[in-house]
Length: 376
Image 1 (cartoon, rainbow, N blue to C red):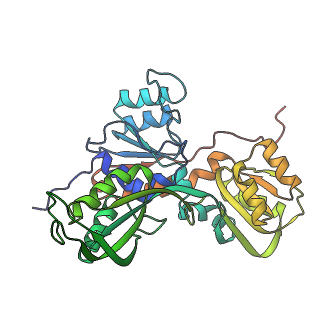
Image 2 (cartoon, one colour; image 1 turned 60 degrees about the vertical axis):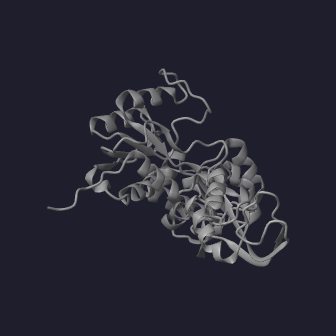
Image 3 (cartoon, rainbow, N blue to C red; image 1 turned 45 degrees about the vertical axis):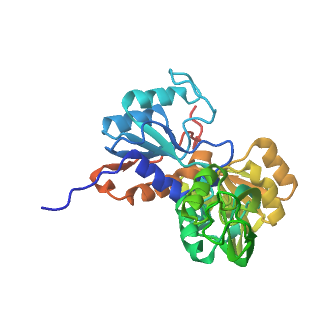
């Protein structure tokens, strides 16, 4: 007889999504992770979609799936009424009534390097680097310890969520120095004796962590530390986003016209894009961004690109962009994010034991349309 299959619980799947797309990369106003439902329930199936709407909840329920994973969150408000109210409450109410949990990865997924590469690759551009140049609020945790305990403490902090930088984990810095202290009264020092100054070789460990993970990282460092009174210091700092940034700057070897750039975008998704700028303008370098791209107009101008290709840009942002020499190609907020659902699906399908549960990716459907000819 073969070994029994361990079916993952919903929190296992959410944890895998959070590892792939760290929540600390999301905007402060965003809502990501498990937004509704019981994470301790064994998974009976997963449905993946762009939007957490009532139709997606209905499909999940009909297929016996108790988890709906989406890119967009069910709500953004800190507190949402769930008695069928609009603004996310109706979807949450329908999901809970159907026994379907809601989870998502939103702006944290937007900042994933794989997500950034999708649009430029579809249009035949070679990536140069991230578009966004902002900073990320984070915590720097510093621990002083004897050299013999450094590896154990670093591993404990990493397991608790410290040291994650983009596509890298376990990132830390260690340097050597001399520690001095005098145990007093009822102290039980691991080094030195009560009443006598101790001089010990020590190392300083530094690791970053998202602010919400600080308590458990500190607890992990404390548990792994041999000292009775270890010195563990936390500072709030800002660091460059590096690869975990919105958008991508890319280029082509041979310049194309703005009209050709827009045509490539339309062909890639089977839609008619909206274009701002001179159709004959030469395009060598472009900025790409999924979803709402208006906030990146300034970054695109600073980067010296010729065009911004994104999901949507507000009217005044688009006209300002053109005035500053930046053309704009809009392909639709939803359309630009269709490929992100597949990235989520790849993560879900890699969860151990998920083979015992059906995983269904709903086909993309545009929420808008453009007439091909006059119908009168």
